[in-house]
Length: 575
Image (cartoon, rainbow, N blue to C red; front, side, top):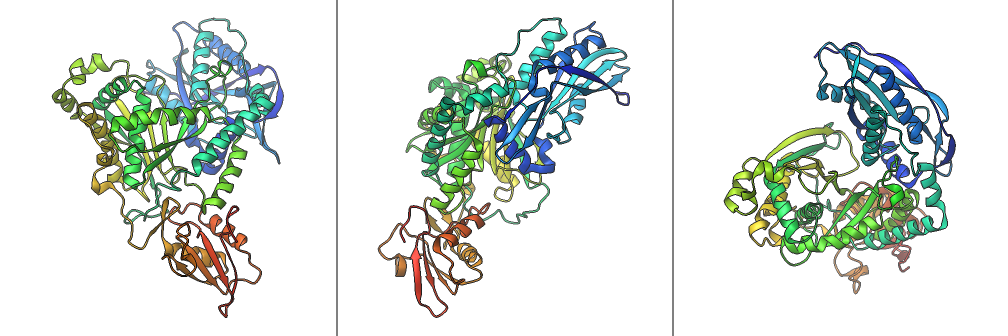
């Protein structure tokens, strides 16, 4: 389809103004955007809105102006201060609108391609609104509006609200003022009741972080893995009509949602692969469970901590066991990310390394069931093993994309399809090879399918070849595995090149102390170096290295072998 070279116009707006601290949801996504730096366009969102027949260009621009004036976050700039990021709503200004036209009737795919152009560049939030617009016309008749927004200004739920409002305005509707704004939400979070709720959420996180494995990736990298691989992070998508049938059947049987079923599958497979008895994943929580928040146009999503102690039973037991911890996670998902980061630092010092919260699950579907599943696939698959297996033959795994860096190692998310399970897995190939990614997706599907007609024990959820192996000299310390040689090297670096001997057997300094599986005997370190300072350096150096944890005990000796200090270095430790 031939599309004209772009031209542009502007819409001028006039609305409210004001300045306020950023909301918790804005701070949460802002951390990720800054971490991604030049690759932060990954987080941008896009939508295409059809223009009704007969609506002239002037009315389209008027509707765009109205929606910008209506939702203040569409005309908000963000600046960093010494305390936090500040949102500043601009009262008067202009937003550019790209104009493109086609001699042929433009399709939705053409509009989507135009939106993809808009989202391909990062936003400069301190001097650019987090909104880009384009109108695609057939000749002079507008047909589509392409919208690109920064995730900093809104999440997908909010974008659907904007899409709905814009569609109504194109039809000539008059809309009541929005009920709630991000500035009001920031004020609510800072008031006594909001702050108390945030502190309660952080206490929940702290309890969870003391009970989970420090990492599900406490094992050697995949063979041939290269840290600087430009395609290190891959996303594959399982497209499975049979998976949708199985998830629906299991949800009905367990009186729960398909979202909980899929979460349980992701957790069981992750824990089975890593050989841990507890699964820990971060969930993406929409945080819209109060009336004032349901249609708030802003960024509300934050991460929630899901912890599942795997039951000694079958997959249905795991599904039923997943509901309450998932509910608790979502109930405790609203908090100040700055305070959360401080909490992680405290937990890291106590446990010996930063929590490796690198596994995620997100159900990005707008509904819990597949609208056209039974009509498209037939009812027989719900009741016949043969029919379900025949449907499984249609499953396929597709490559979606690759990236040089991401802030997750294992990210499972369900995306929308009317008649098939679309289960995406983005993973770090430094720890999971591409063939393993595909096998893990099929493992989740097979777990769902087999559980419809059989009792599948959790220990059989992952085939033995997919369970990680660890060298014989690695040891289990505080619920996760570590490489004593790598720990010794890290302690030596933290101690200025001192000689370090790791005691891992119950002899010498560790005798009679089973809670000290790893003791570092440090000889010839810098004079005056305290155990606490050494411990903090080791913890800091273990960031991003799940195979390293700080020793539970340190023994400091002079170059002549005289012991000058010993202790744990941990805030609540001895010595």
